[in-house]
Amino acid sequence: MPAEAAQTAYQVSDIAFWSILTGSTIIIALAIEQIFIFWGLVAKARELGAEVGKVLYHGDVAAARTVCERSSSPIADVFIASLNKVNRPGQSVRKAAERERQRFRLAMKRRLWAMGTIGALAPFVGLLGTVVGIIRAFSDIAASEAGGFGVVASGVSQALWATAGGILVAILAVILFNFFQNRGNDATVEIKLVVDEFLEQLEAAPISGTENPETPSLSNASASSPTIPTSVPLTQASEG
Image (cartoon, rainbow, N blue to C red; front, side, top):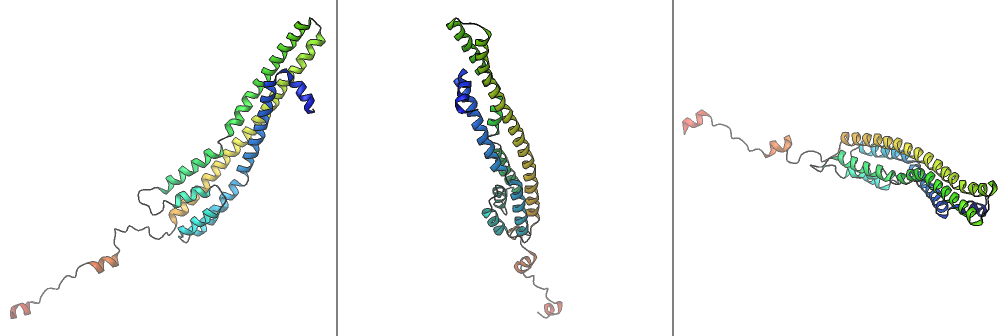
């Protein structure tokens, strides 16, 4: 339908027309944003986890942090938060990773609520436009003192365009919302598995400097212990 015809059809209610048009635009923008978020998300996370695991196998935490800083994967922030807690007494590596992972999960789904809200409200906005259009149609009939089914049918048919537009936008919004919601749940599980594997590799890595500095080694203990003098023979004591 051309723009002029659509505007004529939606003259039943300017508020309903612009609300539905704005809602459809927001849905398209949110869908594009979600596509960019989920595009290659799990694949990049797995690739980063494999690279960091190879470095941690040799116990090089600094090199692992460098790999994460150069990565474009959002999961790199989770790894860096864990690596920053290594060799720090009283600070949990797993808790740091879990906090950062939860932040990423919230950021990943922070705008899905808008898509669901538009899907729930769009039919009611369209219905509002239809009701307003019907009221205008009967008001015009009363003002012109003209009757007949043709006059009423023309106004009602134009008013029903608002309901049709609202339902169409709602269907699109609900489909996209359910799709991205399910995709986000799957990505959350996949990322949790990658993070858990990273933490296992980090805990098993032969990282230097993990010994307690207050506990001396056996060699140091033997070197620092005082020398116990041997007993004096009895023959020497008797001669004295």
